[in-house]
Image 1 (cartoon, rainbow, N blue to C red):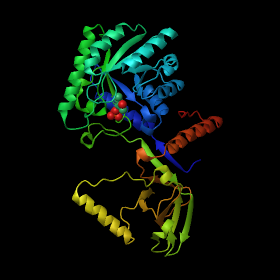
Image 2: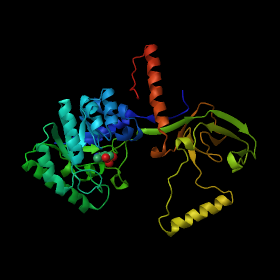
Image 3: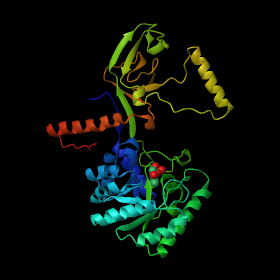
Image 4: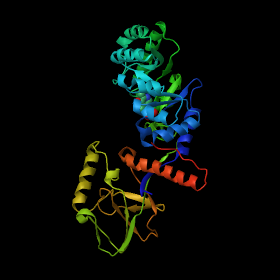
Length: 394
Ligand SMILES: *Cc1c(COP(=O)(O)O)cnc(C)c1O
């Protein structure tokens, strides 16, 4: 049993999926974006959960991510959003992944490889309308249609674009992007490519532009319980499936005046209990993003904070939650060990604490530990005769 991990509540993800589907336009379906290991929650268990609820399509960034989903029994459409190389083609086709076609180089290479394999490549055409990342520019769309007609092994099944400013107030840019996309769709239809699945909405656009849900909406952020911007908060009843936890691995009673940690920046003010948890900055605990002052007052606050630190007065010290109480970190956070001053709170070794960890900073090890232990526990349960099954983490 490890003593630091991230808990994932799959029921919360299921709730979020249902919330999304309730706000979906009638003709549209959900394409669940589970890239980057489902934003750090575990792509396989998340996709398996959504599949049980009837989610028809999934999106990932790389071919490897798509293959992992297939290996774990995820069915339905899997679209690879990022560029794929010709070397990955055989595997991608064997697993029935759909690929994003976003430049002419890919088109030529894929056609050659697919012809050799005697297989058909299902692609979604990516139109570049203002993200400036991948996709065919408007001036290339005629040529795209012409080349597709000469590529018998490439079968377009979808067409999409990605919005750059959907989470911002500025609606004009988004409108321009979608109008440009629609012109591309019309052009392709005139050239004989009709009936393609169309999709433009990410989470923010899904909430803000119901007229543009088309055939699919691509959402990741909402499924993991976040809103793309604070202005969207409350539009859906989302639940947070993510909680970082650790267990107390050592507990001692110490007298007043005990120094704690590197540089002895902390000294106990009274007799107290010191608890140790096995997490530190290697896990992302206590790691802050670089802070850029937003104006003069912000700058003054930073100066004051640093001045107080010089006087050994520390404000904004990290704390954790123990038995429903906020308890402070004592002294500097270490690489993998952190000390808490838990006062006279009745507690013991093995007790759980909740950590304020930034998701993007959390070490993926914590998550893997969680899922692999679930698997161990599940096996143990099966041995013991319980019919409990937990999803596997790769
Ligand atoms: C990440 C991504 C999405 C999902 O965006 P969210 O805002 O997280 O829902 C959709 N489409 C593309 C192309 C993406 O890369």
